[in-house]
Image (tube, rainbow, N blue to C red):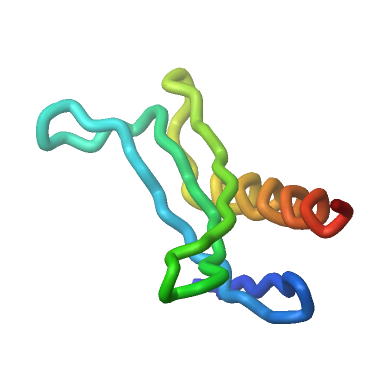
Length: 84
């Protein structure tokens, strides 16, 4: 698995991902879901920044595509924060 790193306020952070899938009882459904990309800024306080990619219930969940979209949104969010 490829690791992603983002620099924020001159500090590199490892990007982590969480994938959430739709369920029907114990069965994982092939359609729908969510991928969240996040960085933890402070482990003690739990402060973090995240962005997500939603998969339509009409579309088959794709972990790779979800990571690409969520990572792009996280980068965009960090750039907007840096501009403040």
